[in-house]
Image (cartoon, rainbow, N blue to C red; front, side, top):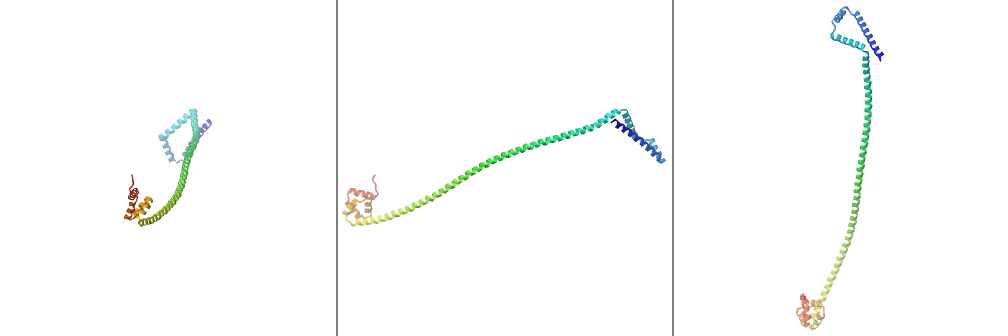
Length: 256
């Protein structure tokens, strides 16, 4: 390191001496007027450049006298970039590790969130499955109930048909009975008329003997259809008790 700085200062001195030589050569080659002007300029040099040159010269002298401090300062300047580079590399490595750890954490969180989502989805799916299962069971129950109701309706319809057939049969029987009764009434009516004619044409004494032995209802029916004179003659010939009973039935009177 010391050799490099010495070489640097040596090269600087050589460059400075070469510049003086070039300036002297230029001065020799310049025309007289330009030389005069340059001399005039040298006689009145600018203040600021002169001060800069003086400061630089003083710094070079101080550096030459305090070469150790200058070398230490330069070492610090050289070390600092290296430290900054190392620090930057460390920071980059740290950032990389932090990013990797963050990625790992994010990946874990993503896995956890995905697992939670999957668990929730499975939970929802299980709940939906239970719900659909209940609905399916309920549907089966309703279908079975509907089937039973349809079967019951069919049975009721069949029973209704049977009952209607029986009612129709009973209606036919009632009509038949009514017809028979009407025929019987008509026959009885004809017979009663004939009996009325018979007893009306008989002598009262003979008719009274037969009426006394007849059914009381039939006797009342015959006497009621006979002429009043014939019925009165027969009643006069009956016993008082028999005549009283037939008279009460004819009038519709009932003893208490």
